[in-house]
Length: 414
Image 1 (tube, helix red, strand yellow):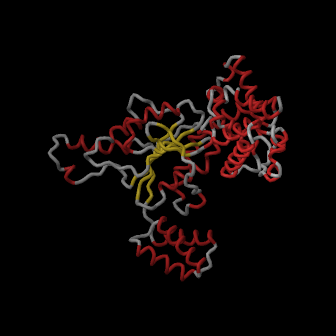
Image 2 (cartoon, rainbow, N blue to C red; image 1 turned 135 degrees about the horizontal axis):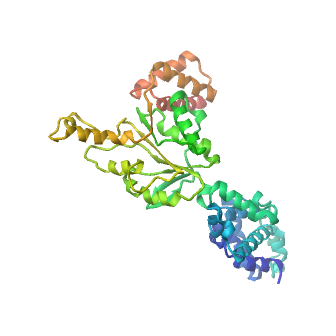
Image 3 (cartoon, rainbow, N blue to C red; image 1 turned 30 degrees about the vertical axis):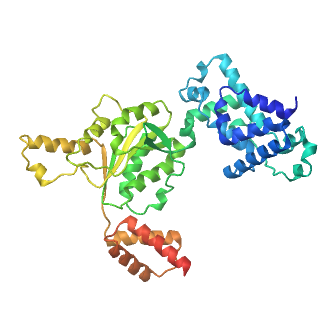
């Protein structure tokens, strides 16, 4: 049996890491290896299909790195056990199967295109086409696969630090259809891009750092005027600290009743999770805020130790109130008011983001202009920034960013 047929046979017998064979690129690679004794049109077609996928994934320069990374992020019996710190409890036979799978993946990923071609049964029939077939670079495995004798220990350490499967690959998620779905392209905003509001962000940041260090920390409510950077602050903190084990799951307000299910899915993951509820508000008739109260504290389903809730709202007390609510026909009107206010009180940390005055607004504009290195005089910049704010109905950090974006585009085109 030639080397390529043997590699295909080895791939077909993967067990614990069998899930990688369902990945698009790996599946196309296996198809190519299996076509080594097929007619020329079938072999050439498999070659072209595989290389096309390599181009799509941007891995023509390092196929071994791509394939071993796919294995690294595979969720299976070994990765789940390592996350829970139970890999030592796996049977000897399972450990042997894991070791074999990892050795196979490493070996097969390093087959060169020339090796595959030289082992093709009907190479002579390909003629000059063989020389013109596009080639990829084998490259090298990811660092966890570099030393075969240490692969299991390297992967165990990786899973304990980063989780497994999608939690190791992605940082941001959304709760949808009673499941956690990854967000492949989260907002890339960084803390350095957010100007002023240092006191407010410092409070949220300190709370988050305490959470990451396992120190007592609080659920957090960021409230205040629109466009002041409440949501941006939360997303920027994720981008700053995801390498330290922070992950974020955005949960729609109308799915709060499913929080126990979400908590169950992440409770055993060795990472820290912020459950993000954006633009939170309730009408006085909307009694679903009772579900959030139970989530924050008071319900039977305890919030896991690796989870905090961060919510943003334009309202300090979250629930919309009117004078009619306070002067209604409720006999125990004070009890009703207290029930409404009790929701916001269950956030241990409440941080206010108020609309900036003229001086603070211009400070943000100047800082952004310096960051973008815009060539414009200070007087002209000030006048145009004020005009832009007036046209938009008020000053805010969002307004400042929009102004700078428009100005940058105009200066680039002029």
